[in-house]
Image (cartoon, rainbow, N blue to C red; front, side, top):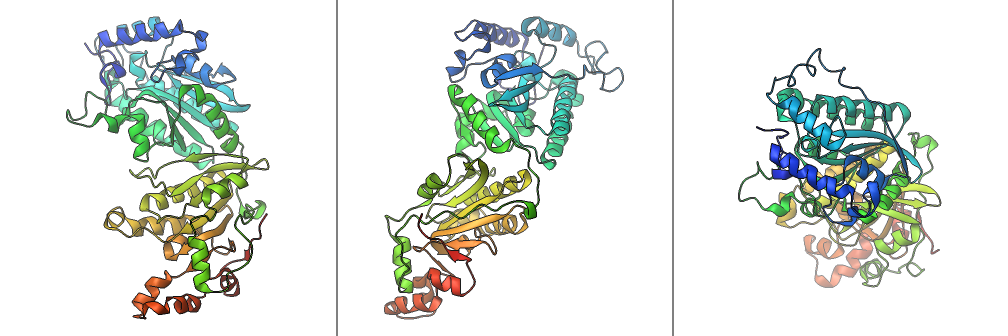
Length: 502
């Protein structure tokens, strides 16, 4: 007899069999007596320690109180009151009774109003010992009520996820809860409210495909099983690393893998950065000021001189500018399409008590995943009403075969579109090489500045000379003709100004 399976179930992780449910119950009960008390904070230092729903809340929250939620009466008439649920699944009532006795919970999710780092937050925490944290109709009731409360009160949502997916004993009535959750998440997104997810062990099936993957910022615990397919339903020869928190991070689907002992502080910083309600509208919002130049003063005398300075190995790069500009910051990672570009840094930072989003090229050829990550950052900042700073520094877009196969043109086009349609002000600073469209994609229209050790060109001078069939000795002359120095860009009306050193 199955007692808590799911479409994304993963062996014991999904609680898919009666014996497995008992095993998970015993393991979680042992955690309750672990060092650190009922909050389980001591146990949370273990990579895959399974906290109860309430222990997980206590591990990240300053204070919390259980939110009022429906008791299932919002479901279709009689559906949940029938013996053994909407399908009449033999033994389902007994399985739920055992789950209640084992966990003290009457459903697989606990919703709470909590403060995390002083920010009031709606927290959704899954109880994996209750039928594998599976989603049923009453779970949907609770999640809908929690999202609605967050929307009505302008609060962020933090999901602490540990689930095997949809509850098979309720059949399609359970599976359709994913549509319900997706709609609520979309409504909160449209309201400009941030959503953060913490992927506990395991996060599979519909819970990953809705609450997890749809979040604005996705954090995962080390070693957690993460994937749409649980271990019982994936191909037998599948690489297990692809279904891990670390594998999802490497593939661009997770922003960070955070050790349990650092999770509370990390959530506090993210809520500090994103959790304050803001009013959209560029007219009422002050743009991010351009950073001061960090390189030596003085403008280049020739076009080729500008190129040499911008390509110098010792020139200040994105990391130096971000470190000097922000008091603290957190980064997102990945394009959510299977790619990560280490040559671009995106995230949110605090500057003089104010949150500013940033997308910074690091001086390498920007890959399609980098452009998509930057576009994701700009759209998120726009939705949350946060001004954006971009740092432009690339010899150009990556142009190898792999980049073409990954959709370089489409990724660049999407980045142009994200900046062009942003309602929040975007400020851009050229801090080094400005190589053609790969650099222009991150340059804000009408709000671009430059440092003295930078240049911007329609194409690299060497390539321009080659295309025009000029002799190699004419590269310097070509660089002058292209008018790529900061002072040339100012005279052409391309930039607003040349920023001085601090």
